[in-house]
Amino acid sequence: MEQTIQNQRKWSVSGGSWVTADVYGEPDAPGLVIVPGAMSDARVWRHVAAAVDAWPSVTVVNRRGRTPSGPLTGGYSLRTEVEDLGLILDACAGTQALFGWSYGGLIALLAANDRPLRQVIAYEPVMRPFGRHVLPDLKAAEERADWGATVEIVNRRIAGLDAAQVETLRADPQGWADLQRLSRPAYAELAALNAAPPPDEPARRADRVDLIIGQCNHGTAPYGTSFDDVRRRVTRAEVHVLPGQGHLAHLQAPTELGRLLNGLATAR
Image (cartoon, rainbow, N blue to C red; front, side, top):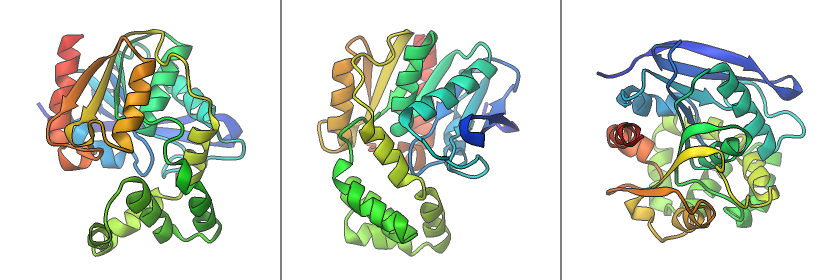
């Protein structure tokens, strides 16, 4: 049965900021916590959350820097994200599994170094030196508040879309406006990712670790090669391939991704 959103939660975090989350299913029941990555928010993950029914509840975090959560604030770092997530996990007593996508995947894996977790799942987690080559241009775009340029840099020079694909995105006024809004934390998040030393052993306190890669990215830069960097550090993880998909499976195949997550719950 498809899960529906039941309520929203809010937590105060460091620097005077706050984070929120959308909760699907039974709000007080332990379940799955989802951590989106860059250029993404809780709303973007609503179709995946609705497709997941193997846990009684699904909590989708709206990380700081995206509405209705608060600003990144000064001193923002990858550690900031891990500490924010720790507060949420403490509040969501009995969390059965933690799932992160991309930058959120790295945050989830690092959170499992701070506290014991039953299961951590990461879809194409990224780590340093991912995207380091575009940092100067992202910084310049942020200083100009040119969020259209930020979207183009991320999609063309990191994700590898061609000019025609970006123009297709731009042709949808509402979609392009959403991408610009979501791109505002992009420089700070990518800089934080590249400022953090690579962890020797992520998720060392997790009982089970599952890593997922889209079939289209297997062995190819930038997502597949960064995935391989993570996999070499989490040698006990089980690796799963999502057929026919790339980095944006949550947008292009949310039902299929939800089914895969349901299957991993059964494997637990």
